[in-house]
Length: 519
Image (cartoon, rainbow, N blue to C red; front, side, top):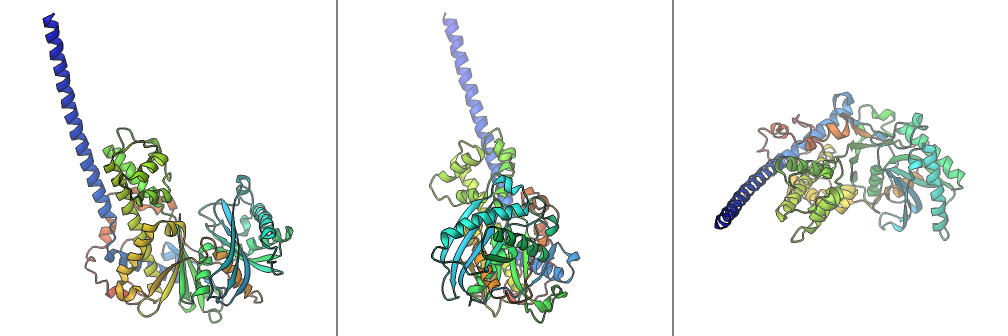
């Protein structure tokens, strides 16, 4: 009996010793993994760094590509299609205007009153309508009929005391790339990422929409369909003649700017002496910030077991992390990062994490947001440099989009990047403002502009500038691949000591600056 007890005691002690050894090993393993995670993060942060010299290279690259595209579009990935227009508002337009802003799966109907550039937009009514799946999979004419049907109800509710003027003007803006031209009018309504509205397409689509308006007894007319960012530019110009560019920062990045017609070799095929300004739109496929964060976390989860021995299945799902969710984690200031844990559970199904892991997730969000915001700021400076409006002219840039409007940290980082590039003496020459009237309201200002030119024979076409370098998801998302190459660093070799003050000289010519850096 005593022998059995002794054996049991020895066995128990041995089990305890073995368990202790295993715990020590597991602890050391976890420490090694965490150190590896930290090394991966430091490398990622270093690769994403955007010091001022690199930002100037981005700006110079943009200016160079813009200039090349204006001269010979075949020589660059940036395709610049000019729109000669006299349709930007003057700020004197007054009255009640209607607008439609078409989005990916919904549209916004608006009515507002303009009282001149010295008064804010007033009496703004808006209603968002979801587009049924059967309408999305239908034809353009079916979509327009559905929009006109909803408009008739919207107008009847809002015009009891403010009737619309006969043959009044309505603005129609589109917040996503449209499919090619009138020839595709019988095709499906929405083909995301390939919907360019050129002059002929915009007018033909407007004709179809006007027929739908007439069918439903709506006494409004649309001149052409234009990109929503052009609408934002119209809103900026209505209130300030110094507004020369508009930028959309949402799921995708888009920009339009005003160029002097004399710098466009072919003049867009019209009389450059008659129309002194031309509008360009720069459309770059969306680099979804949340997707960058997801891929970084996935790499860490696979290589360092960041979220446990098994990689969460949802973490493997592309584009599951939206930028608003990323913003919520990034801007979480609670002591225990409660919002981070909530989003990790909600989005990826990760039930439990340590505080250290949650703080690391926040730091990854910070690196990605800072890089994106600073590159966006550099491109704004590049556009101003191309226009020669840095040293001695004040310029207003209108920005619209949920990324800018709702992501406070991103917005602040963008502003600070412009200030760092230009310095205190010149930073005040580039004024960044939020779009007037909020999201989609540019359609109101488009309507106001067109109301002033309805007697002219020339209707302004839509300009689209498109980056056509391969597939948006694969070719443009170099950060998402997160390769170990040092292409960005190589492009800056020998340039880290660049004098940022010298960069502010407003010469349109720029040196060929290595690799292409895009938002």
